[in-house]
Amino acid sequence: MFSRRQFLVASGGLGATALVMGVLPKFSASVALVDEARALEVFEVTHSDSEWRALLSAEQYVILREEGTERAYSSPLNNEHRKGIFACAGCDLPLFSSDTKFDSRTGWPSFWAPLDNAVATRQDRSFGMLREEVHCRRCGGHLGHVFQDGPKPTGLRYCMNGLALTFKPQA
Image (tube, rainbow, N blue to C red; front, side, top):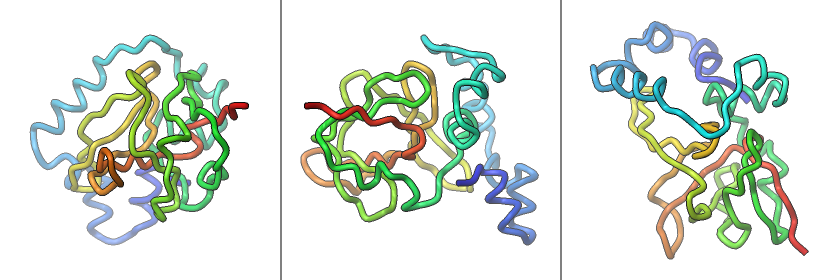
């Protein structure tokens, strides 16, 4: 598992230095506006930084609060095939049903649709590319990204970090 900063530092070279310095991910004024909008977001579940650190494991904190990413194929939830609900590890909001889970062969738990009113998305311009970041609509915790290369019926792939989720089996 690594945060964006750890990834960039580990990458080395001038390109990584430029990214760490904020040159590539923030190459336009629109990125600054997105960052300001994020700072103004208000969520139903809020905690201070120290409270989040006490509630979450160190790895969960990096993912949910610092938009980190776990190593591919490292989550036991990637191989979870029982019927149940995947909830936010930060606030316990039900997010995905096992009925929409599929094997994307990417190494992260993937779903073709979230539960109603469970997640929200926003633009992510990190690493010099544009993606749709997925977060919990109740606590704002970073979950992963959504891509348009998923199966029918939606054609979407919600590629989630397993550490951002908990699993609740159903009888």
